[in-house]
Length: 319
Image 1: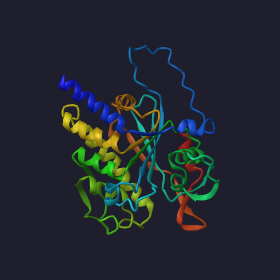
Image 2: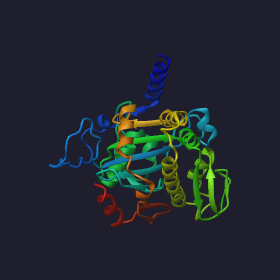
Image 3: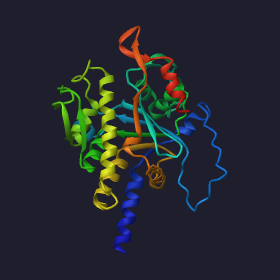
């Protein structure tokens, strides 16, 4: 009975950790259409089939400034947040391959009018920085802005904040990353020599955020490091026997859910578990990481714009 009660409490605790935003209701039909999926005539029904259709998920890393832990990790003052990292994760039909497209936060885009939770809507903004969408309209505006300039329907939305990312890395036992050059960044407090390093959560977060100690100091160099982290985390998850270590499994699940915000289609343990089980054939070597093709903005050397037609061709391949 004690075991059943404990398991019930763990389930309840993890399920209630998850925060959600009703993206679909907020945006209604004012968004790209969903692809039409034709069921295979040869497919055999099963008792509880796992989903296999293609998915597009907008993943944001938020520099949330709320809470002591986020502030200690560099989240800033007590209010507000920005989308510090943005990736569109496209999972192919069959869910054994994926493409992760990083969107530079300094990309200038036309930000559409977005509905606000308090009522009303934001104004249309031309040549606005991409990460301003989250600042002015939260997750709903971030999704609408991505859908507006990509023409790709986002099936799901996932956001994790500073402390959640650091805790996830620590719960997995760290992450191994190889850097191609020395990193000396006083702002992110990261100092690494060129080579392979096993990073804890705080160090991995600093690597994800560093930009001044590599390349030309722009967001583009940081994206390369973030993509190395994505691959490293996938490899670490594959190497960690979570099912055989219930304590570590709980730490990982608690770290993820406690700092997670999703759309309402992923805001429960059963929905997250179904997604995870459907991706069991997706390994790190089957994940391709790319950056949205960009070029320096002709009217602002510190910003970038989509490089056409390469950017449009990339997004078209994900529809």
